[in-house]
Length: 268
Image 1 (cartoon, rainbow, N blue to C red):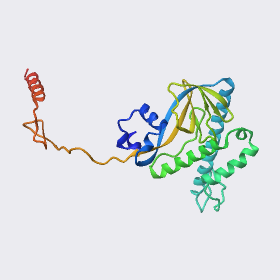
Image 2: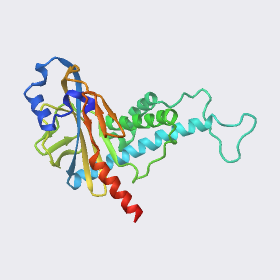
Image 3: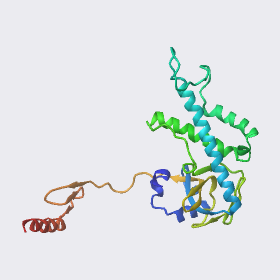
């Protein structure tokens, strides 16, 4: 939290920060505006119908990922064919003028696919777009961070999907209203922070059930702290444990006793 908010908030607890945001105490001071982000995870208690809808979301996301990955893989392999001969095993019949299947072109193709594919038509379009963004990010990290080639996902590997934004606040008490899923009950292990805006929600399938990650954000003002107090220099010595710039010498009595005890044990 200190890296995001600055040194002024290092000793603030979450309750104190929430109180400052609710009562607008932070805004009374001069400072810089930063975005405070909190991620909470709650256990979902969906009914049987909602479980089916969640599984439909996961299946559609898996299909979108695998299809988009296959397009990129085929395009890359088609650029590796030999010019003077054809392979006896396989041949990729992709035109040399075919553009690279980037996120922008695949997002446009996804809109057309949702019109004819019933499995994708009932799924929120932004959720599927997030899958394409995640795949595009995987290829970028493969090149920049030297990571492995993205792999196809089976049922056990596709475990979550994201709702990137909400028009209105979907939380009402211990329930959250998700597109196409409906109002699902959450087990609130902690209170929802007030004066924070829900930015996105990720539904996760685990062995112990379904969970949801909620990302809350709020604009806060961090105090501009200037250097103050007295500086102190410390030097580690041999005769003394430490010597400070205030001419204070710190003895090493406890260390000497420990070293004497260890020496005696070794001699025994």
